[in-house]
Length: 380
Image 1 (spheres, rainbow, N blue to C red):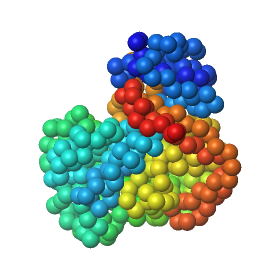
Image 2: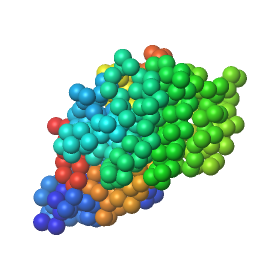
Image 3: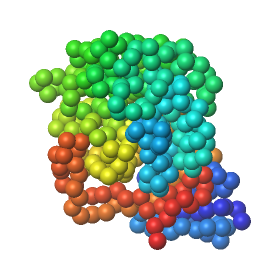
Image 4: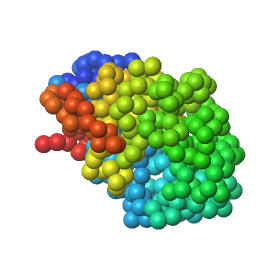
């Protein structure tokens, strides 16, 4: 047989290739083998009919927490991410230098989900909610962070700093963890990802002043202090300046970081996220996030096109995780990850992180997931 798997009759939505049209997609040896309007089904070991459905590259969620049984946020990656379409995820700082070797050995290397990671500038990472990971400034260990990244370049793509005062960062530490994250990231030539809300500063401007091209501001639509809007509800000039110099805005929905009024105001003023992510963890898995598909559906409700939403979970994050050539697309030769999804019509309850609801008329539902050229899950 020429192909291991053939997905036929679907509408391929692949923003990296500029395709939104009827295409067949064939896989062989774990990679995309061929894309064409009509491929021979007799040459495939397995044939999947995607008639009436969309076929997209495997989704990339750049903000999750998948270090279960060690960190208090952690969830099992395969049933919560991969089974729901996120074939590649980025764990956003669950592990710091002291515990990353265990994360690699006991989770990353044994999961079917492709897991990359941002290393927490706190060497202890997100072990417990009883003590903030940066309650002591000494935990922001630049040299330990640098050494760990150098030893794990294949998996670590940046440095994460969570800056919320008191619950995460002690008063003595202030904004110093941000500067130490910057120092560590610069030492290894990687970007930083920053969780900004309620930081020890006057406004988000103080944080953005430290951020450079390819850095990621996650939780960009929260409604706490240090947000993207000023007191009058206007997008801060510093946010537009940061976007101009290449800082990326990431959704990071989470349990407290997505507000309908904030995102609606930002979109009305022409400020869109670059990447859609879930910040999926134990405290939002059963609502209001559920999975990446639910967050994507919220942006369809906000008026973004399907192509825009798919780009924000495929081609754009592929560039952000330094894998633009083989992830986030179904071009021949790319990694053989795909999602078959259907657009459901009806009435759908969509809650933000504060319980405020909107009613959507569409819901994007993954019905089959392909990982490395083989069917991982298919709805019966």
